[in-house]
Amino acid sequence: MIKKYVRCIFVLLALVLSLSTQSFAAGTKNLKYKVTEYNYIPVLMYHHITENQIQTGDSTVVTQAQLEENIRTLIDNGYTFISLWDLYNIKQNTDWSSVRMTNSKKYVCLTFDDGYESNYKLLYPLLKKYGIKADISVITQRCYPSYQTKAEENPKMTWDELNEMAKSGRVQIYNHSIDHEKFNENKGWQFIQKAITAEDQLDWNLDVKRNIHVFTYPNGETTPWLEKQMKKAGFNMQLTTESKVVCGKTPLYNVPRITVCSGESGKELLEKIDEAAYRTFAAYWKKR
Image (tube, rainbow, N blue to C red; front, side, top):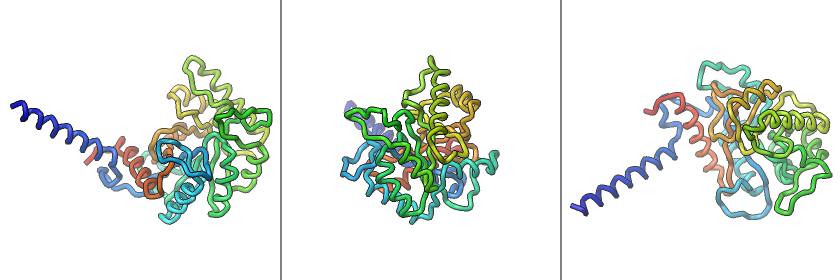
């Protein structure tokens, strides 16, 4: 009898693991209604880039070779790279009553957080090589010559480097806070004021004026109250780290992004985009 119960327990555990795996690997083919890459826009999030080999894992550091392979895979699969300004305009002309977008092309956005100098040295050449766009959110305080880079910290870009990229038309520069301090509900108004100060620093130091005001939340941490107040403060678009895609009903004050991790191939990235699309649309439609 005991052996019988033990076998039952193992069977149940195996079933649970199987279901959880299926849930994790769920793609858009499992949705109630048909969804294609023309019905949504993935916004990808990268950080630091290196020329050296790194271990595959949860780190967000990618090699230049991986980044280029990701870009080539997206191009080979028919994606057109657009900026956040392009995304903003597309959303302004989207039917907000529909979950599915009806884009004429398969669009994707590349975003890079923190303003690492490697974005200038290793990303910028790839943007020129492939004729594509990207958006970089910088920690403004760390762009000044007076900023002392910590021993464990990767160097950040200067205003001169940022201006060179912005003038090329390949890159737009946005706000990732003044000091990368995470949101604290007890200091909500102070957080907003510092975000506005960082926006002023961008205006003072960038020669190319931005068409929209984008705020990228440090560590993606935000609240409905904060999003509402930041919108009132003039931030047209706010970026988070929720792993979903932009669909017809996605509000511009809570734009999700898909984190690209070290070692992820283009094929794995396409699967990750599909899984993010599944999570997005499954929230509106019941599963089959």
